[in-house]
Image 1 (spheres, one colour):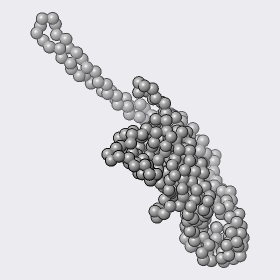
Image 2 (cartoon, one colour; image 1 turned 90 degrees about the vertical axis):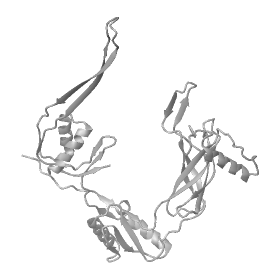
Image 3 (cartoon, rainbow, N blue to C red; image 1 turned 180 degrees about the vertical axis):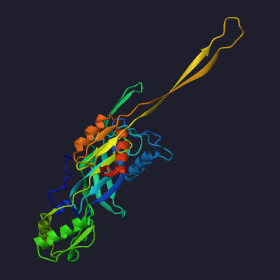
Image 4 (spheres, rainbow, N blue to C red; image 1 turned 180 degrees about the horizontal axis):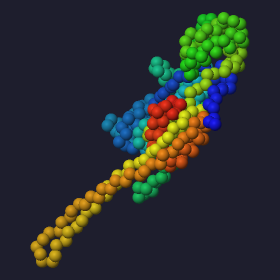
Length: 357
């Protein structure tokens, strides 16, 4: 008797894990500056903008270089500084920053980031960054040109390296409603969230507007609204089961199959065609005093090998282990697995969504 495919069940989730609150989101910041104090591993002389930045910085401190003098420094690197400003952060709070080399510096290890203005998409300055760069990569080289690189020495992190100087306004405290945006759009989940909120508080305060958002009537006083949101986050909802997926990464040959893949009865025969081409050069050497010339003639050998694939019957099962064992039994490579799963999906024997990244 074949095993019966049972419907997938999901555990209850909190509303907080299922939605984002409209008006409360992160913002990206970016800036440009210099990292100094490097041990002869900074940008080379051909990176002109680094030398121009050094000249402009020295001019701000009253140091005037003669005209047409290009400062040749090896302990400085031009860098891009990026950070993420969490929602509703206030002035004086600290955030992490990432420092990445722009020029041809070999390493940022041991360097110090100079004071950097971090701008938002609107061009305003929201934070100031400065500090010692923590680099996880290492680069070492010898006089002969040989070198060894571990991880990425041209990018680093400054924990709590930036201080927020400007707050980003939020419409969270505006109006008498709050909009919950679903992380995974679903009409069923939106309706379930609205029903759970109405059951937990009072009927009618939550309305599912679409598969993406739910509108909730909330108190207008800031303290009462925060208390309301803390209670709202604890409400649990049984979300709709996520359809099983098979993810292909065509660049790396990675195949990832989630649990819940349903396999119907099928038969597979997968053969491989191997074409081998080898090039050899034959040298024809004439005899002594014959007056001939040495000639080199190319010779190509082409062979085609078609291995006979074995017909394998797959039983109907909801077990991911059954599918994996069957594919391993074929001796399939990741590329072969992609082809087999695509063929099974087209034949209707694989009940899952295929996604190529």
